Image (cartoon, rainbow, N blue to C red; front, side, top):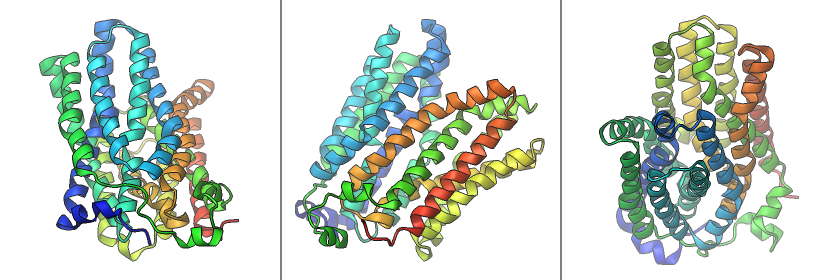
Length: 410
């Protein structure tokens, strides 16, 4: 069993650690809402004010996603060795400073430098590092606490998209960015710097480390089939997720659906994500992590099949959004618990970072690949078949990993 770090034990006894989990949950809501979801709202006003192309603006976001993937492994390794407090505090402080710099940006090159930095902030502050923290601090019930954290974090887009839109309308896009900077500086930074008390070094050896001696957890993972099954699963999952996300609107337009209907369908996804997490919270304790994952990964190809087989059905569109959103909400939790559930808790940060690298690269490249397929064939039918194939490969990857999860590391 992994024990909480000694110097944090007294702090965690207060409220059984739930005040910390609650504070971290709302910090995730702010971090996701400001760093990730708010971006799309600044594209149009920046395009009008600065005259930059939409391609150039979205290229900065792609750079940020790629950067987040590239630095995920070293960040995870550092959290394993030093704990999350310092790194997550740096991430929140850096995000605040970069939002201020963005508010005064005048040149495209500077904008790309800012988003390179925000990519680092994503790796330092979003779900992956806090999953490592919760797994280390609460080894007996980390799945339940991660579920609660993502339940709150799932409202990030619901809260910050209208809030940011209101700030842009009332203050202008530059001052809206200063407001986002203030959110990170005044809430996220104090939570990470003052409340978080995790520190590596309080863990005792797990069964896996006893068996393999001094062999590092990351090296054992690289030799373990579970790790490679998870690589396939999460890489293809995030590729299909990203391709669908950025092509929803043009796909609906091609099929003759109105913009209002498209927005209505997309609006279902967020609440469905939260509903999926609530369902897992209520009934998930009766299922193993492997069983939960096996069910969830099959829901993605089922949802895409609705788009392929019932292309003209409005009912199928809403059924797709419900199934897809519910599965995506639970998949976030599966992603956060797969390493400790199917492998081991040792070296979780590094292993999780290694899984994140190909997944984030796929997430950044998939929209462009989908656009190429669309341009080659002239319609979204083949794109959806490619997405379907990716979803099936993702499911096969998890089923393989789950089937090998009892296999000793070689």
